Length: 176
Image (cartoon, rainbow, N blue to C red; front, side):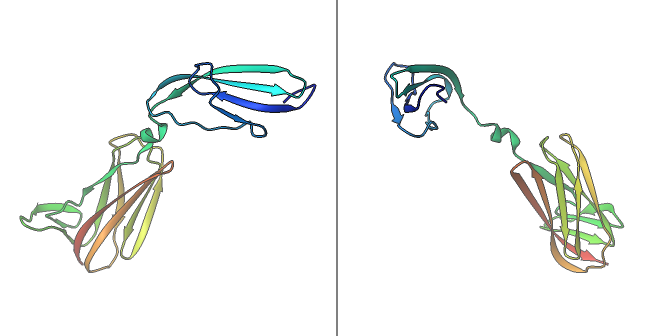
């Protein structure tokens, strides 16, 4: 904004070497990409229609984006592949099985492995359950599956936090 005139030129010095690398007559917004993380001094110079010039220098921090700190991670800890469960109790391992065997109901347990998980949905062949919360790492979230479904299926669990999502699945054979 220029109180006594009109800005004619916006110029950007991206590496503080005194040479203005980019300019625009109309657009005060510019973008630049640095290849190496670090702190960079950036200068904006504006010139108005009366010959007035003003500069502003700011330090820009470039590095890992915060998005990398917002990944979502979960793990299904019950049931486990290669185990037999009867009435929600782990009975014994089933060597060589690449699925869990469930007789009657079971409580699905999901371990939260990252702090920013705020919503978990457990999807069964005969319905789904969703829970929301502010869970800490290593929290165990439980979903009861009491449906009458019989057969082979995959129990799917989806977790959400910020813009991130994680998904886990476990193959099961359910016998009523």
